[in-house]
Image (cartoon, rainbow, N blue to C red; front, side, top):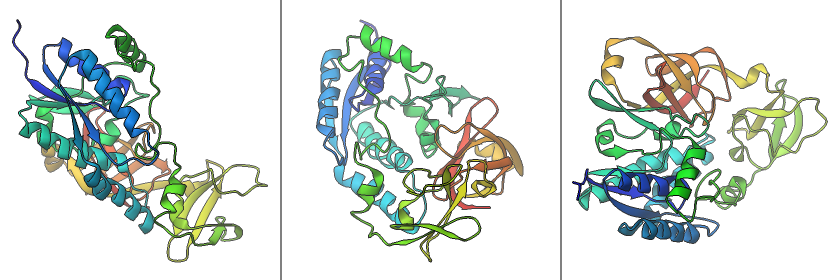
Length: 352
C-alpha cells in the first residue's frame, strides 16, 4: 500500500468537473473525502445535484458528507446580491460564494474534520513562485474561473488544490468516461448558480418593488420607460423593449435618485467605455511587489470571460491603457501579470 499524500475534502457539486477532480486526486494517492454543500436554491434542481454528487462519490468509493449551509448562503450571498441591486450596483454573487462559502465555511469545516487540503473543480491553475503558491489563468482560457477566485486569502492557498486547472473541458469529459462517472455528459450550469432556470429580474422583483421610470438616450431624450433602474446592469442589451434603432441599445449609465436608465446606441458608443476604476476590498497575493512599486503594469479583467487588457495599477486604482467597455460599479476587477499569474483583485467602487 502506498502512503497517502494527505487527506483532501473535495467540494462536489454534482457536476462533471468536481467529480473528475475527486477521481484525479484519488488516482494520485490522496485520501479523498467528498462533500456536497447544500446551499439556497430557487428552482428545485439542488436535489438532483446532491444525488449526482452522492452517486459519483459512491462510484469512486470515497466517504461522502453533506454540509448544510443554506442559511449562511442566504445571509451572506443572496442578501448581498439583493442589497447590491437595491443600491444600483452590479454585485457578483459567485465571488461572494467562493469567499464566504467554499473557502470560508467549507474550508473551516474541512480543517476541523482533519483535512490537510480542500479541493474544488474550478478551472484555475495553482502554481509556485518563489516557493509560494499562486493562482494563474487556467489552461482552458474559455473555461477559466480565476476571475471568481480573487478573494481567497493568500495564506489559504497552501491548503488548496485545483486538479483540473491544467486540463481543457473536452479532456475532463473524456476522463469522466474513463473513470466511469455517470455524469460525464451532464450539462454545465449557466448563470447565477442558485437561480437555476429562474431569471434574475423575476427573482429580484420579489425583493425590490417595480418603479416606472424613463429610458433616455445620451442626449437626455426620453425614448422609452422601464420598471425600475435597479433591475438593469451596465452593458445590458436585452430587456429594454425599445425598437426602431439601426444599432442595438446598451445600458450606459443609471441615475438611481431620478430612476433613469441611460442607453447608448451601438457597442462602439463612447459612453460605454471608461478610462479608470477605483477599487475597494482589495486582496493582494504578492504584497511585496505592491509595496515596492508605485505603479505596476498589469493585465486586467472587469467582467467574466472578458479578454484581459493592459492597465496600470496605481494607488488602489486601475488606469486602462485603452478605454474599457462595460465597467460596472460593484463588479469585480482582477489583475494579472503578463504570464497570467493573478496579482490580486477588488470591487469596482467608482468609474471615470
